Image (cartoon, rainbow, N blue to C red; front, side):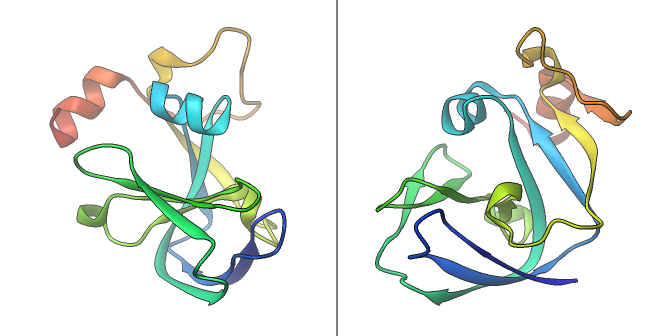
Length: 135
C-alpha cells in the first residue's frame, strides 16, 4: 500500500510502502514526551524522501532506535528501530490515512489516565514488551 506524507511546513516529504492496514499506539515515556501523548505509527516496508533531506533530523533516542523529525517545524516523521525493518511513520504525517486502523497499543500500563481509544485492540504492557524484545 503506497502512501505519501509530509511535515507541517512541507519541507520534508516522503513516499512509503506500508506493511499493512494497521497502526500502533505507543505510550512509553519517550513516545509521550515526543508526541505529547501517544505516538501513533504505521510500519513501512520502504521509506523514500522526496524533498528536503537537509531539514530531516535524526535523534538517537535509545540504543536501538532513532526518531526522525523536521528541523524547521518540529513535526514527527518516523520512529526507526532498524532490527525490525523499515521505520514506523507518524500517522499524522501521512497525506491519506483512509483504511488504516489501530490494532495494538504498546506500554498500555504507561498510558496517561483518561486517554482511551474507542476500538478494541491488542495490548502489550512494558513487561510483555521487555520479555519479547529484551530490555
